[in-house]
Image 1 (cartoon, rainbow, N blue to C red):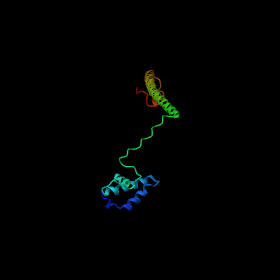
Image 2: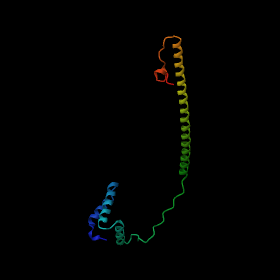
Image 3: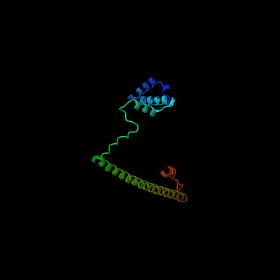
Image 4: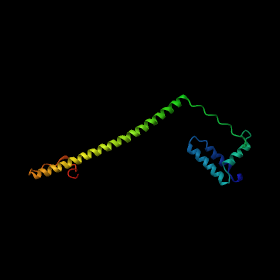
Length: 153
């Protein structure tokens, strides 16, 4: 241990900054104090042990820690909230399943619509061929032909 190489006045000032209400400032002070200690081959544990030796009211290292207080049983309002959360989880699961089903139905109906559009286009092409064979004048393009579907399917 190298307490002789440590500037105790400076360490005390740095540790005093650790009591700041600003978390960043307090954390920086603790880190600086730790660096000061490690620079001389010491650590926070060494500092705590030294303080304990000079303070007779401080607990000794060999003393066991006092038992933690036991947790209280859950309150009724906590149990109610837990039940509500579980119910919401169930509803979410059901909604996800319904959304997946609806997406499948939407895909199916989209495919039906495309098939119907293709069939109408093929009928229009056949009708145009029959009119041309009968010598009728060409007609203006249909909405499907304008949309780029006519004659392709």
